[in-house]
Length: 263
Image 1 (cartoon, helix red, strand yellow):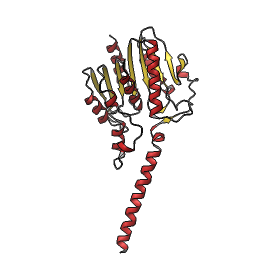
Image 2 (spheres, rainbow, N blue to C red):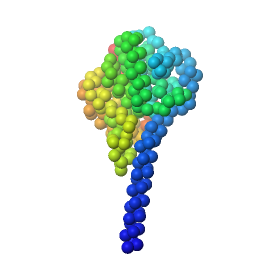
Image 3 (tube, helix red, strand yellow):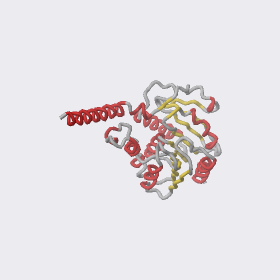
Image 4 (cartoon, rainbow, N blue to C red):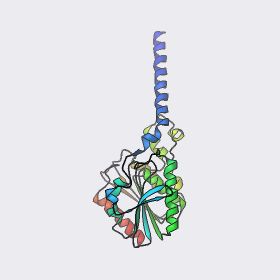
């Protein structure tokens, strides 16, 4: 009887731990997913020569080019748009207008980041694009920003798309990480790139590191396989992970793609 009682106690304990940790994941998923910093949006040295625009509550760094083309950058889940100022040199190889989007809840914004607020930012950027009548629109998204970029593309008027360290659905990534939980049910931040890109027929390149342990490249491959456009390209960068994908070959591939879709 003592042995049976011990087994029952162990099982009860395991179940309690399972439930408590599951509740922790459920109620803290936004804090787990988003890592904003306290960068002052108005004082970003990396974009000191860019306009700081607040359009319908969405902030972004903007540089007007001489062409009627624009590149829109959606960053990952950590830091801020200011942190990505090093990337401007890649886009400035061409003479496009450039937009680096900052998300609600980032860069000293007192709101808590969420999919709902980020997609509202995308809606606002889309409205800004419509008001300025750009002829050729290239959208870039990395990591969680690939969800924002894919959603933007679903709204229309996007000619070309660059996705880096992307995924099929965020639920797929969550399921692989928390295998013992029904992640697709528990996950509130449902970014579904397959759904958002199901009707996209423009140019798209997906770039991923083959050593990415945060978002394994099998998830970007799954997205690539689901795309119906014939103008798609998949690039796997050897020896690179999620946060160190920057390299000369990566940079050159982005520049090459932008030049190709503009010619």
